[in-house]
Length: 415
Image 1: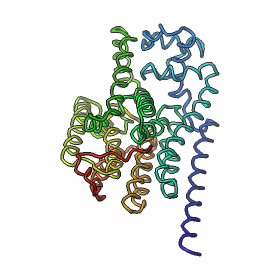
Image 2: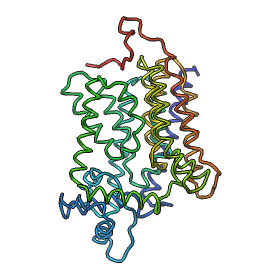
Image 3: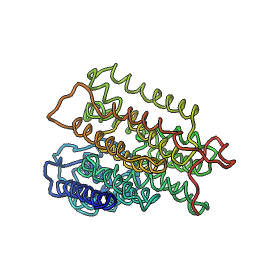
Image 4: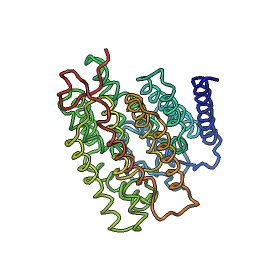
């Protein structure tokens, strides 16, 4: 058997194994095996059900604990306790509203089907940059079948949409003509608005490319969504948001399970002022170091940009104020970008595959109720992955045409 045939056979075996793993995750969620119920989706559902019943004016009181108790009681009956507080921006409830006309369990399963389909579509869209490369397809499939996908499915979370948002953003950069890229840039802002705290690390790339009209449209769309939310909630609604966020993070879900710098210090030092201070200090420290690296050695080639954006995603997750295991789905598009960069530099994907396995194992160990490790492993690996990805910037040869003298070059625009 030739080496090409052996490679193709091995690729088929790996793909089959990954598909079996993904099917096992889906089966576990559908059957409810060892699943938490009610889960995070319940919060989205009750808020969306209330908006469907009482209309847009309810948004202003959506973050009142009393209102959320009453909305849950409409579906589950009086006398129960609030399962999961709704703390996402209002757009999250509006997105789930079409599903709120179904019973809770049916709505959850339908949403999961849509979300995992969107995740697969986004990863396929990104991998199409090299459609003939089976290795990149395997990386995309491996990212789809990862442990964070399982947790996001089990919770009915929005995190499965991040690859589709990343693909839309990438497409907005690659296509020509404002009629094509403006809607894509604006749609990408909608994805970010679902959980804006997970995307802090993208501020540095945005500032680096501020003169690009695509970035300007994206930032303006984000600002418009933020302003619209503020005007919708009003001062009283914003006070309720702050109160509910404090209640949730301090009492219901303290950072002990977070896969962030805050979660790392919370586990290492225990709850208290020192852990909170160091966790919050990680945000300006991470952004500052990232900005320094970008100013000192900006990305110039297509491969450089894939690496730089992958590094930014790792930093963003590391310094997020709050993030659990399902948020690691945000690394899925980064994995495919890294694969594109490696292939563009003529390098194998073995090292990337080991990183993916390591991050999945770290997430599994950190989330396990049977282990009480002195520190969280995932934040350490996120920091190491951010540094490793950034160190690859500049390893590919820059363009030889005169445009190579420009400070930063994005990937070539496709007609």
